[in-house]
Structure formats: C-alpha cells, structure tokens
Length: 232
Image (cartoon, rainbow, N blue to C red; front, side, top):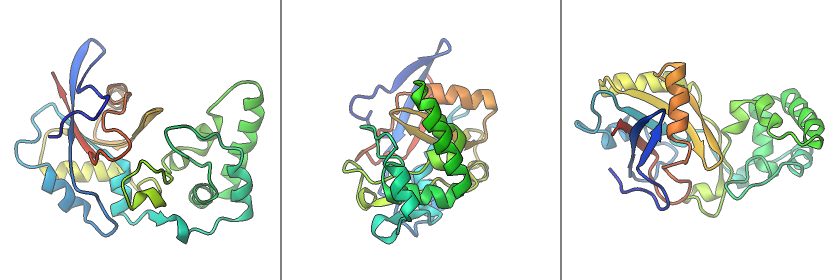
C-alpha cells in the first residue's frame, strides 16, 4: 500500500462508519499492457480481506482497452472547434474544453446527442443552472480525460476515453482475484465522481461515491490508480 497522497486523509466517516482508503502505488500503465497481469501484479494474496472493496480507476481500464489517443493523432472537425469554445474549463481538468476532446465526445456519443446537450445547457445556463450538458451527454462524455500538465507522461499529451463494459470488467476482476471483496471501476476527480461499473449494489455504489468524494487517489503524478476501501 502507498502512503496517503498529499493533502488527502486515509480515513473518512460516512453514514456513521469510518473507512480507510488505502491507495496502491503502481508503475505507469501503457497502451498494450494487459489489465489482468497488471491487477494481479499489485493485488496479491493478503491485499484484500473480506468486506473490502477494490476500486480501479477507469483510466487504466480504458488504456488497456486501447482507448487512449495522442492529441496529435486527433483531427477535430469544425463543429468540435466551435462547441469546445463554450465549455467551462476548471482547475481540475480541461474536460471537453478543447477541440480534440470535444471531437472524441462527438465520436463516442454521436453528434445529435452532443448538439442536444449543448443546446439545453446553453438555455439552462442562462438561468443559472449548471451541469445539464453532462447530464444529457452521459457517462461517456463525462469520462473523457484530456491532457493536463500535471498528468503523468505520456498522458499529459493524450485524450483517454471512458472504458468499455466497466460492469463486466469489475465482475471479471472479482473472479480473476478469487475474492469475496467487491470490485468497482470508478471515475473520481476533485469535482466528484461516478461508479461506472461494479459488483456492488446500487446503494453500495452510492456509498462508495461518498467514501471517495475527496478523491483520495489524486489526479496528477501520484501513480496510484488502485485502492482498497476497508472499514476502520
């Protein structure tokens, strides 16, 4: 297990119970790496105990599925250039606020869906309501990670899409590890998070989001794409 990431606490209280968030430090996952080999390299015998939940960042799942693209290899259409100008950028990531990430959203979600989400968001934003674009565009758009200077190379110059079939991945990893612990594929950042797929119940997924709400894995050079939730 790794030490707590800077500014993060390993312990949190949710619903009256205390939980440890134990990050696992790894090497940098690269395109072509095998997810099963990666997981079994770091989640060894004794890593998990009954009642644990192993959480895996969606980014490493997507990378091993070949869903990472260098910015220089993406040619955005004119519509992507136009729409990206109206996306609010935050200190936590560029989101779809650059033509290359918007282009990948158009490919992933379909042009009609992105246009509809943008149109609704333009109207509701004028009335002070935020977040409608991603609510309509969905998890595929929300999960797209753009390049940032604080990201580990080579992903500081890459766009990474969300993983395919995350619920199946979670079930597969649970079987692979032959564990009674649950497994979740998560998309967590400093603005909040989503459980993209897991072996948990819906209530368990909702609780897991609250447990991870302060993003204990961090977003930059920590190289901790795995972690364990354990009752304290």
